[in-house]
Image (tube, rainbow, N blue to C red; front, side):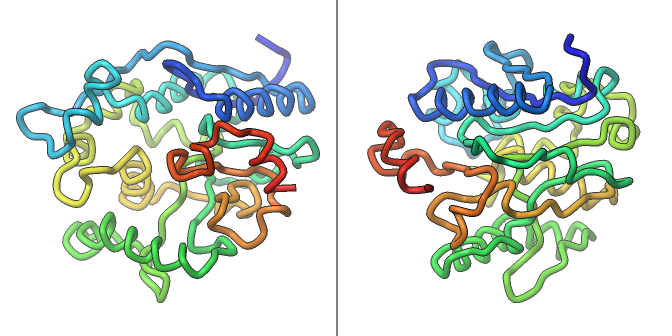
Length: 266
């Protein structure tokens, strides 16, 4: 292990697109610049599966990966909490600019968890409508009937984009109650999220983690939105340290023309 107390964890299971390869390489270079350990998970370990007798998810959504949901492989990072003071979990579709600031400096606080709140982004009009609808679909039921305050306002319910999260390990660890990553994800309270019940049919770990943060009052830092700039959705993409090429299938050429995308953000 490198002489560092910080790690960036990424998941890259299965074949990777040109865009993902380019983004992951940018993270590798970023880690070298700031002396951060870079851990890339290439083989699934948790293989979290929906209950085939209860799930509302389409068979294709999990069978194409061998019967499991790869989005929940990110929680493997929790096994390293005793090894690093701070851990960032960054999606494979996030590009880090060469001049990007050190994300870990954002977590110089007594918070356990940090992420970007979507309604605090400099969002475009079309995406504003989208996140309002999304937030109601994912969190209204939890707010109204689950006794959890998701702080609604004119932009819907408060939620964090989990494509880029940062953890202060020793402050966060007690909230896991000694559970392994698998035990954490297999809590009965998360079953409806995993199974994709109701409005959570297309949900990812984003819904589960937002629920977890709110329910257990995990001290959470609202990170500067420039560290998770949603491509085509924010007005200030050229000012963002991290560019998130989310919704890959809706990108020009499905993201395969990397040069075109790099030109668009510079």
